[in-house]
Image (cartoon, rainbow, N blue to C red; front, side):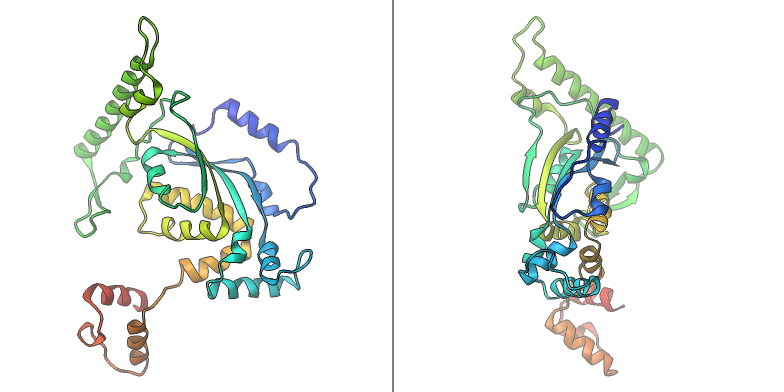
Length: 301
């Protein structure tokens, strides 16, 4: 289970003691505050704090006094305009702080987004729990034959069972040795900062991750994409649901222009115009490489 009874009791206690505030409040986000959203087998995402809402984005864009809203429809139109024309600064006025529990190998992908403030659980100071990410059988796949960083067909039968058994036995053996090395019973015991190097990359870590909405959208555009690795994509999917409740107008614009939209090069636009005029355009006459042409056809069908 992602949460222990003690952790759930702490969350319940926090949610049972609301405090009055004069700052902007998002009712959708208040419903998520402190609650843990389960991800993978032992992981979770939960909102610790946030700042701003859809109105704050518009207020910043207009540099106005107070709420700065004209009407809901005007605000939605302004937010769509900002998203459409890549005006990022107003979205930076909103921030969120997340508590995330995730496997170390997912954390190493995640940390590549260097636009957030991060504080990770210290395995130099504390002892890591015996919790490892073990994939579901349908998440075990062979190496893709067309994508060097992707997956192919799902493993089946004896091969899948053998892989799962290797993962489980290696994890437990490594943790047994970790406990043995740091034990001070009858020995000095190895320092935790050294003993941790023996642990596998699927052990769980935790961190607080604070990011503004503009950079969060960039993270989600890449990690909630169908081509992203499954284990980080499920975290991004969970965060998408939170953001949709937090800033519904901004998320709708993001979903439309970034997740559901496409960016075309000058050559691609020229080919599209020629096609609309009835001209038959091929890769050879497009001026694009085979890879560019394949991606272009994937967009325009």
